[in-house]
Amino acid sequence: MKVKAAKCYEDKTTNEVAEKKPVTDEMEVESLRKEIELYKEKHLALSEDINKLEQKKQETVILAQQFEARAEKQEKNLVAKEWSLRNQDEKFMEKIRSMQEENQKLKTREHNMKEDICFLKKETEKLEAICSSGVERKMVFKGKLIDNFPRCGINAKHQIRYLVKGGTALIVFEEASVAANIIRKRHHRVPIEECYINVKAEPVDLVVLDELSMDMNRSPRKILVSNLPAAAESEETLLDKLELFFSKSRNGGGEVENREFLEDSRSVILTFAKEGVAPQLVEKKRFDVPFGGKETHQVCVSPSLDGNITRSVMKNLLSNRTVLITGIPDIKDEETIKDLLEIHFQKSTNGGGEVQNMLYCPEGRNSVAVFEDDKDVSS
Image (cartoon, rainbow, N blue to C red; front, side, top):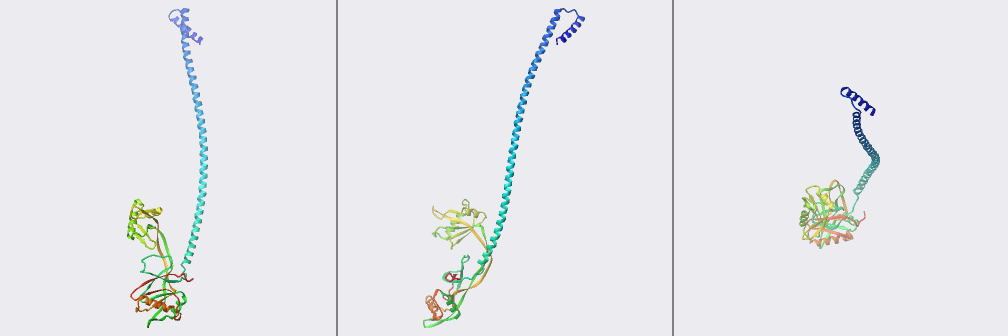
């Protein structure tokens, strides 16, 4: 650099000498000194620039190292996440396989249950056919009377209502053979004090249910309310208080469309105007109902069943120990005629035997006799 500077200085001096005046040594030294100072300043500036660049380079290297470390860390995280996702995927696939196997097992179980249901249906039909196949039953009048024919109702056991007209009697003998002898003889002469009455012995022909098929369904709008309080209140009062309680929405009820008191079981059937009320009441089962005063009484709510008769077969059945005596005139009071008939038909000389039960209905009246299963005689 000094040589080049000197050369430049020499050229410059030569030109200046040529143009102006000769330069002395002192002037040349001063000029060189200024030139040197100038280049020192430039050198210093370059050194500062180099230091700054070096600093920037170090900072850049540090940033590059930081970015590289972050990139490496991110790569490790991505790899870890990838492995985690793979594990989760494998677990989900295993769960799906398990669910598919469980689903297959459930389908197999459903198929087996359907087969079992079909089998049970067939067995039930067989049992129903056996139970309703017209097995011969022995029916007998046991002295039970009712005032009139019931309007509705089905009894689980055989219970036949038989209309006894005026001027007739029903006599139940302990032995079926005695009843058969009396019927076989047919016409009988019964002494009444100093005279006789002629009566006729006839078999009792009952119409019984031989076969019955029903469809039973749970009613969507009816409930059966049982466990009612003792008969301290009238039937209408009980019905009013039950309707009032179960018609309120806060008790889970709704508008009551109809109500029916079942006297034989002392329970009540309530029919609601809308569906959906009955199921929620049945689910709760028990309710504390105020029937008067501050005390309440807990009643039970259960489903009500609707039954539709799909098929019924009736048949005639003779009561083997009961004889119908007809043609009895009203010439004496009821107790006297009853005693005379019983005395006559108990005598073995008249073909009779021990009388177990007897019903006499005078002329001008009607009675209803109830025939039930004869448990005293084996089938």
